[in-house]
Image 1 (cartoon, one colour):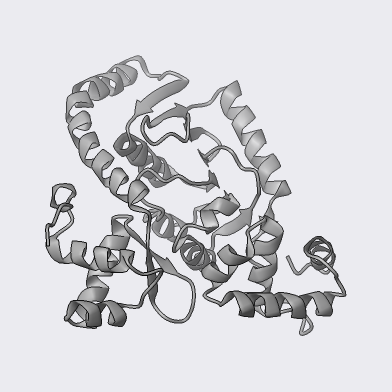
Image 2: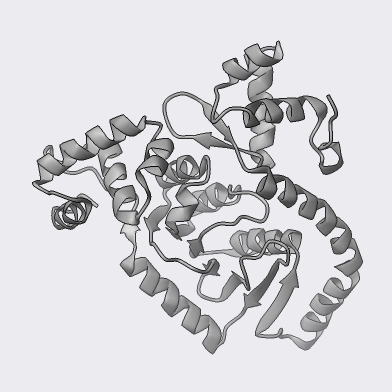
Length: 317
């Protein structure tokens, strides 16, 4: 078998695992191990590396299941990442010169344009590492590098508050909902808002990072420092936050639904389709609809809209 992903840093065995997973909708390591004639532990390690590279996603549920991410997006992102490494070397001198000049003058431009997914990723990491109080984000696909945020857990452990508003489309990407639930368990405040059209990260209300388009063939972003534009972006984020639906509820009274049912309600109100909800929760479509029918009866609702309104009044969302 030809191994064509070596040029973007994927070794031969990991590529074999990825190809095997592409032939299935989803699989656990043991199923792929049987197909490839190797151990489940070795396949699990390969899936972990593929997940870190953005080629596969973890699915929700009790079993460790994975699904392949569309190669049109995932492999292209790796290619752009490698190309960006060369662009980074070419642009390093100018970038360092601008930093030096800003330090010499004691200030910096209110808006700085950065180009390339690598540069965007570096700025996102840098701003989070510099955060002291809070990081507020608007999140939606597509993702230039990976759906994961390895900096967030460390920052929250230092006391930084994370508040994130996700587009429903983000929850349909393999593994994203599972990652969000882990972050929520660690302290992230997460909400969902249909119709979200931009991506944004605001740090301590003193700096923001915003991609200028969702076109992954031309990754450009603006770093915005204290200005009227930054104030406007903070106001816009707050409006989105107040309109969004919480993805997690605190423990409540005994008559409230189980956590999985609260998540089901949140995803329904957020606008996800039945198939996407069932996939993210690790249920069959039949199970998902049966659980929803039971919630309708419990709430006395005849449709999703009514269920959302009544659940909100009872503070289940």
